[in-house]
Figure 1 (spheres, rainbow, N blue to C red):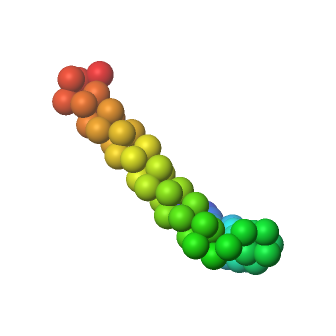
Figure 2: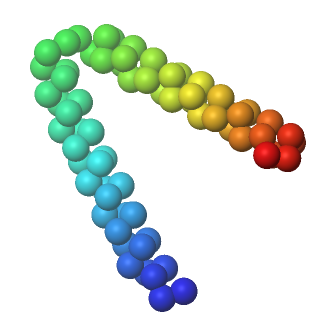
Length: 68
């Protein structure tokens, strides 16, 4: 496993960068809309993402059960 260290380092760097960008984006967005609407949008985003992931999981599980 020669690539484990660099791969984990790269994933950590990407995730920290995304967290920083999302904080900056939230700061900009909070200036344009009220906090409740921003929270509503964030919550709705989480719900949509969880539904999409659940549908993908169900689809791949059904494919495995069918032997495809």
